Image (tube, rainbow, N blue to C red):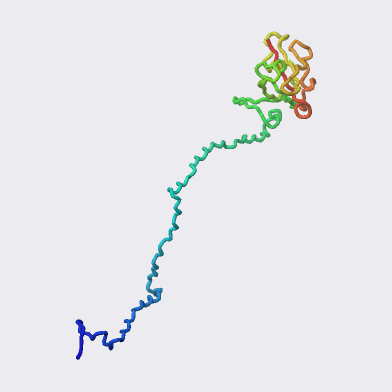
Length: 228
């Protein structure tokens, strides 16, 4: 006598009673085949799967994370224009066709009318510092009077110098110059005074001691003008 299960198979897998049928073997997945890159002559580059990006977890502070702060960018300072360096034009070389009296220290005077200046033979000069605006520095110590520097021939007489500075308008007794002696800290002393009416004003600047050594070897000459 034979018994069959509804599916037409023998009961208990065909095993005798009391014998447990062994479990069916489980299928084991086989490993993937090794990656073999294509040959170079195929012209296909291997494509690798992208790995998932690792994201570090944010710590839980119990409140929203702080917002990063960025310092505002300061604008760059404006570029100031830089003045181009200026150089004096080169002095032309003396023309040998002109007489030597045309030049003084290698320079000449051109009046723009084809007329030149013939300087005296003696070309010794002194440097004179002249106070402008009829300023008398000994009267206002610590002031800042304006002044100008002049190159003056030493053969000039004192009277000629006074007239060249603007003195001598008919009242010779009130027109003259005074030497100014600097004592420091903006203080000045009134030095020797020479008026147009004085005979001592007939002497030259060289005889007075105002020579080319003033301002280099000895003290510079500072003068102020007197006029009515």
